[in-house]
Length: 187
Image (cartoon, rainbow, N blue to C red; front, top):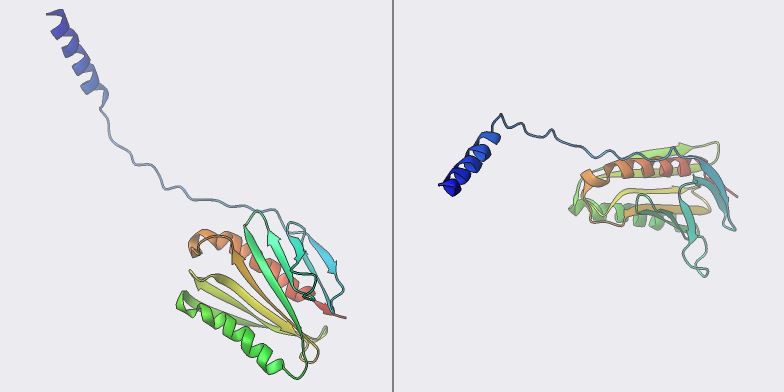
């Protein structure tokens, strides 16, 4: 009898404790905040200088390949790959190659938006492409002086392409790419 009463009491307590309205949790959103960029001038043996974010690291690709650099962003797990080519009656092919590299992303991209860049004072002309969607690279660019120098770059993340997830980091690095283009000077 005592055992049955105890079981009945536990059952009543369990059933009576589960009352009330069920309230769903509000949606949570990831908030990524990055340090404000601060820029340093980069001076190399190459025929150009530019500024990069202090939170990034400049690495030479190989000692034997002149003027190819990687700018890595450890917090964002991203890299800007820079390739320099001297212009020697091959500007058309360099431009075509840079544009074709961007167009290779059309299979996965939702859209590719080109923006022209012109700085007549410093003789810097170029293009930056914003690639939306789950493409491998969401920012591509090139700059040239049209006579001697050509620099191209691509931003890649060390992650599977998921546009929504990398959007804050992508926007942060895109601003650094724009700053690089705005501060490039030919020697």
